[in-house]
Structures are given as C-alpha cells and as structure tokens.
Image (cartoon, rainbow, N blue to C red; front, side):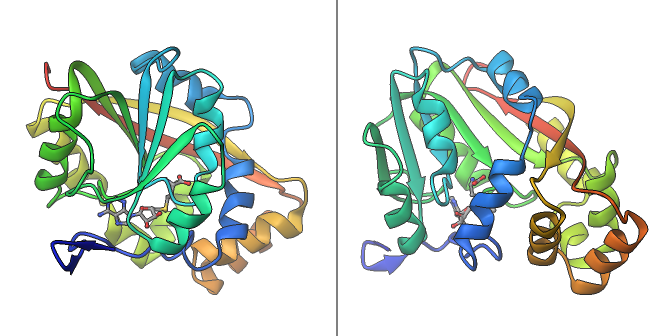
Length: 238
Ligand SMILES: C[S@@+](CC[C@H](N)C(=O)[O-])C[C@H]1O[C@@H](n2cnc3c(N)ncnc32)[C@H](O)[C@@H]1O
C-alpha cells in the first residue's frame, strides 16, 4: 500500500489478525455474546440509517454487523492481505486501502467512525485523530474500543503479559484521551467460545505460552472469560 510512492508510514502489522486471520475471526465470534459492548457503542453513536467507517477493519468481521443497520458501511485497512479479505465480506460494504493518518475520504463525509483495537494506542495518535476528525461530519463521533487494563479476567492476562501491558498502559491512555476531552465509558462483557480448544487456541495467539497456559491451568473448565472494555469517544463538536 502506497501513499505518494511510500508505504503508509503509520501501518503497524497486527500480531493476531494478520498472522492468523481465521483464528482472529474465531476470536471475534466469541466477543460480547450478549451484545453489551455493541449496545454501549450504539448508545454513544447510533449507526442505524447513518454512514459508518470501520477504521483498521482487519478481516472485515464487523462490517457484516454494521451493514444490518447502517445506510453506508466503509472499511479502511492498510494491510493489503486483510484488505482483500475484508473486500469479500459483504456486498454492500466498501473497503478502501488506507490508514488512520491517511484516510481516502473527503472532509465531513462520515457520521460514525469505529476503531476497534486499531491505531489508537496512545500516546502518539494525534495525526490519526486529526484525520478522523477531518472526515467526520460536524455532529459525527469517533468510538475507540480499547481493553480495560484494570477490570475483568482478560485484564489479568494483560497484566501478566509484558508485551500487551506495555501496549496500552491504563494511566497513559486515560490521560491522553482526557487531555483531548474525550468521553470515557467502561463496559464489562465476555468472551464465550464453543469449545475449550477454541479458547486455548485464541489465548495462545494473544499471549505468551506461559501466560496462556498458566491461566488455563487455573481455570480447568473455562470456555470463556470476563472481558472489560473501555470506550473513548470524541467528535469535531466536543
Ligand atoms: C487487532 S487488529 C483489529 C482488526 C479489527 N478492528 C477487528 O476488531 O476485527 C488491528 C488492525 O489495525 C490495522 N492497522 C495497523 N496499523 C494501522 C493504522 N495505522 N491505521 C489503521 N489501521 C491500522 C491492522 O492492519 C489490523 O487490521
């Protein structure tokens, strides 16, 4: 993917969706079985009858979900392989090569932007935030889905994993968004897998083997876990 002859400089290949997209789809299927997270996102910025951009859409898993209600669904993805995969996801979704800092969309053209575990890992996200605010309509809203690093069983796995913990230290993240007057909402939901083997496979993708193995040993019959999210939302008017 190139912008003026250069690869998107802000593209960071993902260690999960890009490495094993089928397993990442399985992870997404286990996300939020009762729709608690989705309801909170809808409450903050409804997308029924509106245009919605899924920024860093990965395999495009969530494009299908948004297409049920939205008037227009756009995915933007810098990874060429994932972009191709997302393009075959839903006939009505438009998937474009781009990145947070290089959105191939006109000013004031989208009403809702979602970024699920994509790009917004503060600090250092001002260029992407400015670009998102450029493409949002004046009353539009960005909703960023992040991990809650303090609450829920998933947070204990993050805390045990130096790699994941370093990615999104809670205080740095909260301060960065607060300084930009973003709203913050905690949501407690869950992962729920059909089988323990599926849970083990996804934990093995997301965490070092020792961290995943130790958690599984301590939860011998688990097929899921409690999962806390933090939603940060901001718009051109806020
Ligand atoms: C963990 S995956 C999440 C995918 C998708 N949002 C989901 O929840 O299924 C992170 C995604 O962000 C994409 N990404 C990496 N750098 C990016 C950037 N600078 N701007 C937008 N997306 C980016 C990756 O290619 C990957 O698809």
